[in-house]
Image (tube, rainbow over all chains, first blue to last red; front, side):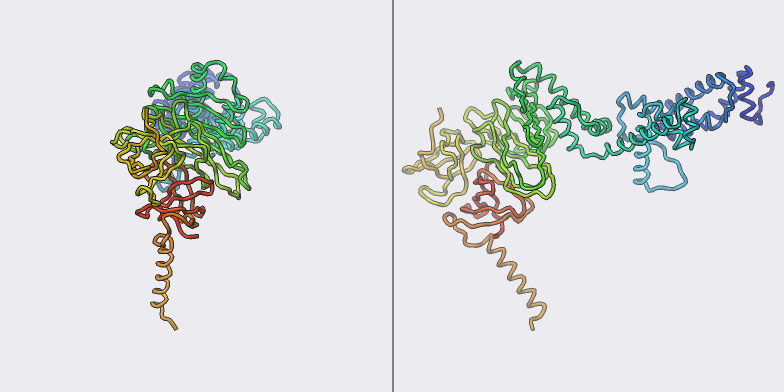
Length: 471
Length: 95
């Protein structure tokens, strides 16, 4: 063809290009570039560079494909399909590069219906997620699904394109739809449940369930959680002497130590107890606190969630899955890292079940805490996350943070398990208690009674026989 | 036939009596134990009023009060888990 005008049809341009007139393809490019870019922009982030690249890529593919054979091509829909595939490839590539899919940038949603901002935002997110899921499908599945759902082709037509049987295309479409639904479901799964599964899988040295892994692929926080688990195992394997690593017969214990506030030495431990899928996490100094903490054991009496855990302090978390019916397992033991002692029981999360420390746990004195639930009858399976604060005692034995500690210099420690702080010597009224090992400053004596100030600043009278001088 | 105002006053008196029965009753500082239940969403159990948290109780959980602090703000209780600790008295109601 010698003259290419705006009235030249697509079929004529294709024929001219196939006949060797390269200007014909320039004309195709000029005719469709802007339209294809608008189309691509709907699918991709509003990034002109990416949109242009995608359209250029589709044009490149078109120029090669047109010369491959002389079969009839409906140019316009064919170019749109090529552009769509290139856009999906681009989304897939970005996804493979671990691009955050939950960022704020969204697709431009175009359509005749004016949506409310929140609806539009939700729909943009949904479209973006669907496209990302679509892009992640194996190529044959993606092709079959898109051709079936979007282009409306029959299974026979798709089979012809892919060179497989119609039955095989049905299978591809079915698998693609199933994958998309599973991906969507994975996004809505509760993070806590996924993390329990990750912890269990990590502990049992197996792969987590496919559903959990699908969720991890979408959830940045859970991805970070899984990464931390892996990192922890590597770090622990380096630090822990060999024999400890073979302790794990139902209970793997990789202990971290909380010494001198060094993060490297305070790596978390993982412990698993065989019953009901219990998993334990230990957060050491420098780790972000997993929960807000209010305790006299931490400076200023509180620690916000995410704040670095102070030196000499650790947070131990244990997730429990409880079966419906009468609570079978009512006690468990949580252990503080070496060098630290049990401090506060932090607010439990999940089912509202009465839970307390139980004997022989002594705050500030024992390293292990026995935690006990009250008898309960659960109408349905429940999950509870228990969290305990651990603290390295000072030379006096106090686990109270220096800035929270009473000014009085301790002179004695309590040697009774649980003694009342009485309001008067020989009196029966009491306004507090002291526990074994708690340091106190003796201020006065009255016969067999001593007036004391505890390290928490409480005052009262205690039998002198319940006190021993500090060394 | 009592008027609506009389009924309201009577109801108020009953409510006041209920409150006094828990917070203001002549509960002994020591000696006879009284039973109570938690009447707030949740409450902490402390090893001592100025000390560390040793447990959590939830609405409806039952405790046995063995004594109260001098200022009557705190109750020394035995929990359903057999732990002894201190709970804010205002968070407890008579069973």
